[in-house]
Image (cartoon, protein in one colour):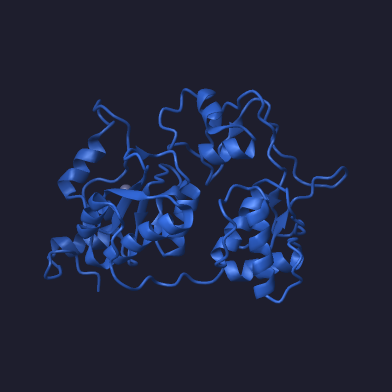
Length: 321
Ligand SMILES: [Zn+2]
């Protein structure tokens, strides 16, 4: 993501695209989640869920969908990406989507601003100062044009491929499911779980890894043609990277042993992406935030063709060469 071109001009008389009037509701934009919408409007996740009983699965919302805003919701900081516009100056106590972009940029550059929450707090300032020092900029904790510029360049760095071994994740079920993945994915999956634990303090459980074509067909049928349950996938047998052991789904495993889908998906997704994984939270249409995959540059059609022609490794997994 380029971070050089951001504008937050909202002073009187400054010309800019007016934000949509949000008195009646909020239109979901790409990459938004119920959590980010709640945060950007200064209300709790529970409040926004209560105001939208029609949203049965809070993890599934669609760009363009209209949501009700609860009592007490405030319009988000009027900031928007404008390639031709000036860069906003950000400092301590600023908040809003532009701060989220700053925090994402710091993270991509290898600095830790804490939780990506759109609030410029102490940890964000600390990360800004460390970043400024590393780039020979004035170390003032204030994000002006030079710091944005340096972040823009560093955010464009290519992802380093993950190397190394499979590591134990601290959850036996997770280790077993990782063991069932394609051998080329096991190391990155296990190191991803480890890194989320180290960076976010969140223990993940892998709920789903390898899935046979038949199991995928059964999952596709769920919620369709009168079958019970919500629709959870758009892929039939052979159309999901799960069917080749190249995808896995995660959930937060709480210390009490219960799992929770109400977790820091943005933070988890960002770590996965930094490790070269594709994250289902970025998909449009059916957003699938628990889902991560590593496609090795192959489409599912190409993979299916390899399976059908028995282009397989000795261990039975599809040949990725
Ligand atoms: Zn999945």
